[in-house]
Amino acid sequence: ETGVTQTPRHLVMGMTNKKSLKCEQHLGHNAMYWYKQSAKKPLELMFVYSLEERVENNSVPSRFSPECPNSSHLFLHLHTLQPEDSALYLCASSQDKGWAEQYFGPGTRLTVT
Amino acid sequence: QKEVEQNSGPLSVPEGAIASLNCTYSDRGSQSFFWYRQYSGKSPELIMSIYSNGDKEDGRFTAQLNKASQYVSLLIRDSQPSDSATYLCAVRTSRGSTLGRLYFGRGTQLTVWP
Image (cartoon, rainbow over all chains, first blue to last red):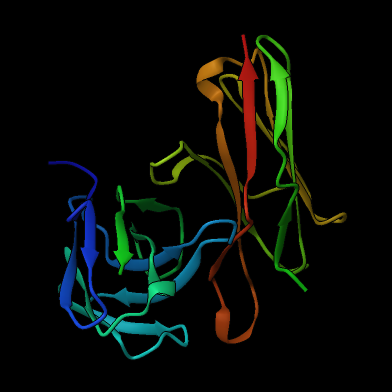
């Protein structure tokens, strides 16, 4: 596979469930990002990892928990979400932590019921 | 104050026309500017980056940057129905704790009709 991949592509979960989103980049990049995209709102940066170290946590509620086991993989663990968390969750990567050109995965469409 | 502002549109142009998409930003020290295209139900795709004042051309796309006016635009020549998408402007900041962070506008929805 090439580029940035994400699984699952669609997810429906109840407010008491626990699930995880997965992202994998095949570009040899050193930085990875989680964004949230809601209708009629700009892309919101959630987390940034550089060389497996979290360098930014953008005031995200603790019900979202990121994990970066290596520079190619990024997870977003979800638990006790709220309906307003329903959105498109996008993973991106860039060459380095200098925040250069970012390349996005296809996203996970999350619906919280 | 919003970091990056775009007209939400929709912008509608006939096939073959020039589509002009505009973006303003608040951080005067910003150095890097990007345009992403997002088709409905898909993720953003990087189509242009520009770093210095003036024009940058890539095929039918031209990015224009005016740092004095804090303004960046994207022109699409000979617009095609396949160009119909939402175009996101992104600006890389230069200040403080958010150094280097990308800020996105809400996007402008473009429709090219045959």
